[in-house]
Image 1 (cartoon, rainbow, N blue to C red):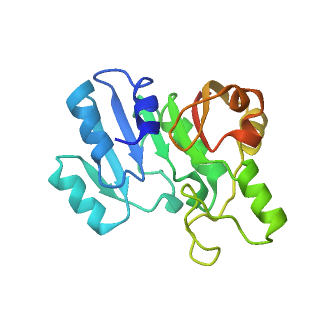
Image 2 (spheres, helix red, strand yellow):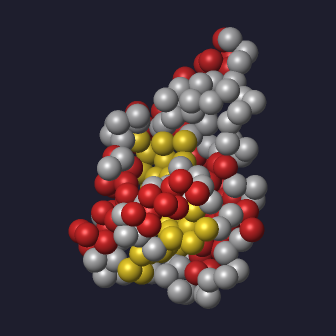
Length: 196
């Protein structure tokens, strides 16, 4: 299991109803079912990942997040997850609002595009940065909204979203003094737990 998912699971109550947006192969939901007996549902668009979810015993719905979440009733889940997907959707702000409509307990993770290495590469070489957290070329990246920690903090402030926890971590999902002091400059990945 990815290290960011280990951090996330501490915010999920046993036996709760969990919706994982862009759930991939369903491994995390399968883990939560086994370890925390959650009632699971995943949304995924990739056919191969949907088949992996089904083989893992994960409840999955084929759905494009860009089409919204109107098929889910308000307050129908205890927790909604969006891990490493926020930057790939067309309207992240609308998706965040929809997450808060269907659950008061929301968790998002995303790569921080303002990390100093990305800034330095863009400044010194003049190319869009690539790293293990951003492994794509500018022309084939699924990332269409380059979000920073400060950007997401501002979105939460503007929309009156209450941040319960914010963890900023490196490639190995460890935090440090510098990351806590200047998260937007030194954090590689951001993990947010928030509510309305």
